[in-house]
Length: 126
Image (tube, rainbow, N blue to C red; front, side):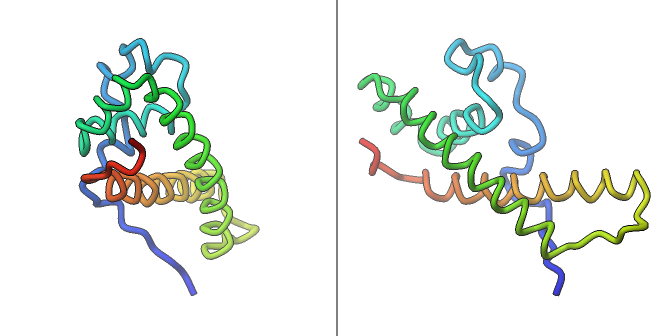
């Protein structure tokens, strides 16, 4: 059974590229992809929570905690995606590269959608 994930969610743009201004923010410098993504999604869907976390000096810890979780979850989901969508041994280089790219994008899209849904109206981390 093959699982196909469409790349058409409302947060697909976040998945594909981080805005230039986000990379210039001092609090995001040095953060890996998932840390920047948590910041971007939080800023987009729940700025009140972001402001309250920042006021309480807890924003960095919050981003780090979410980033660590998402990195582990992404690795697990990529392994699962590869298992569900096997690639033949005779597959060429370009097809293999496209398969790997689709795997990463599908996982990123899924996790970004879940992150965004969990942040809408959330005050649980305050």
